[in-house]
Length: 135
Image (cartoon, rainbow, N blue to C red):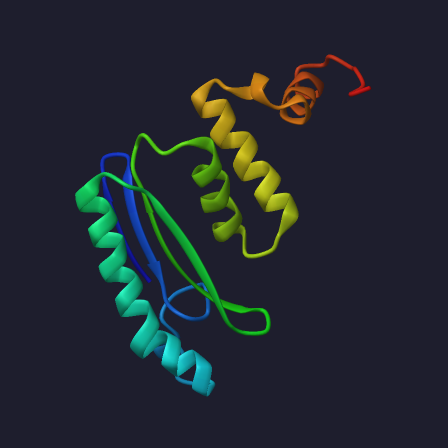
C-alpha cells in the first residue's frame, strides 16, 4: 500500500486486496481480474489522482475486480466536502458498517459539525449522558 501524507492532504493507493500489495503475501494467488486491476487499472487511477491533486480536486475510487474483492485509489484535499469525506470513510471501512459509522462520527467530531446529522448528534448526546429519541 502506498500512502503519503503531506499536511492534511492524503494520497492513498491500495492495491487489490484492500490491505496492501498482495505481492507481500507469497501464498496469495491473484485472479486474472486482480492481476489486470493491479497491472492496468491501478496505475491509471494513480495518474488520475495526481491530476486531481494538481487541480485541487479530491478523488475516491473503489473497483470491485472480483466479488467482495476491491482495490482503492483515494486523494483528499483539505477542503474536501462532506460527500467525498463520507465516500472516503466508506472506502476505508471495506464493508464494515460499524467502522463506517464510527469513521463518519469521528470526522464530524473533529470538524465540529455533529449537528448536521440527527443520528450523529444522538450518538454524541448519549455519550454525554443525554438520553433522547430521534422522533
